[in-house]
Amino acid sequence: MADLEQETWTISGLAQDAGVNVETIRYYERIGMLRQPRKPLQGWRRYDETALRRIRFIKRSQQLGFTLAEVKELLGLRGSASPATCKRVSKKAGDKIAEIDDKVRDLMAVRDVLADLAGSCPEDGTGRPCPILDALDTRS
Amino acid sequence: MADLEQETWTISGLAQDAGVNVETIRYYERIGMLRQPRKPLQGWRRYDETALRRIRFIKRSQQLGFTLAEVKELLGLRGSASPATCKRVSKKAGDKIAEIDDKVRDLMAVRDVLADLAGSCPEDGTGRPCPILDALDTRS
DNA sequence: GTAAGCTCCGGACACGGGTACGGAGTCAAG
DNA sequence: CTTGACTCCGTACCCGTGTCCGGAGCTTAC
Image (tube, rainbow over all chains, first blue to last red):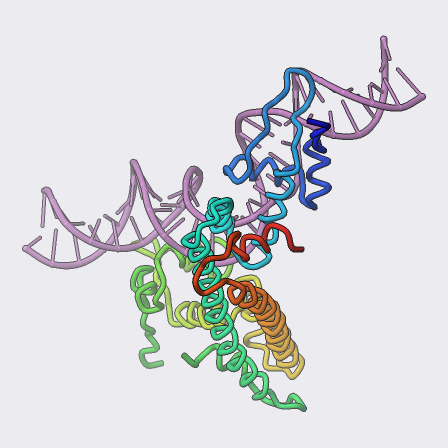
């Protein structure tokens, strides 16, 4: 068995490579998203490749709109390669898509109202009461 | 001077009519969105029509996506019927529309990625590693 | 007059996702 | 051997928008 030595980092090295703050790593440890490596008798804790991958997984998932609680579930599903697992992950993705669709619908509805109001403003600006403020004041 | 008596409410009456909690009204008072009426020597504070309108204004604005800080500004612009004021309000509406557009764009981009991932899942579920988890694991 | 139900007030707590602080231990360079 | 940079740890704090709590005072109905 030749050198299976893996690269390891101190917490700040890991933070740098993962593109997060040291405090964020500690936070993930606190909330159980990341296991804290054992503290050696001598020196500082060392983090390995799996920690790095895990943080990157978290960050990518967050970028896709998953909350940390949801990411935690996804992390739990990693490793079990069963069709059932894949199905559950796929469902989560579908749910998230539906969530996004809802949000977009809401935003567009609000956008329409705002555009309507903005359109009601006279170009020259001679209108007595600002029609937008007026609408906020009186309309349901 | 005939009876100019206006309808007034206690805080819970106001809350009910405005469709918010008593605590919310107190919160608005705390953060300076709503003036607390003077406490009479005898009895409880009484809120009038302007308080009711103000809360409704706040709630409508919030529904359109304005934060309380932004609503505060809008409230400050109420009452001055100048063209300049109207222009500023109109700008705020435009900014909010742009904000919404940005958010929708972001959401749609994320949606695309998610849809892509969901589409990569085999229907039958025989895939070894779940392609979604795999992507979260390795892709940037 | 007394009990129920309201107000008044200050403060703590919730949420999600971190950030900041302070003191003690540890490590590496000069 | 000292200095500066880093870790480690617990704790408190930040954002926005409220919500809840507890005790004291007030009002209204019976």
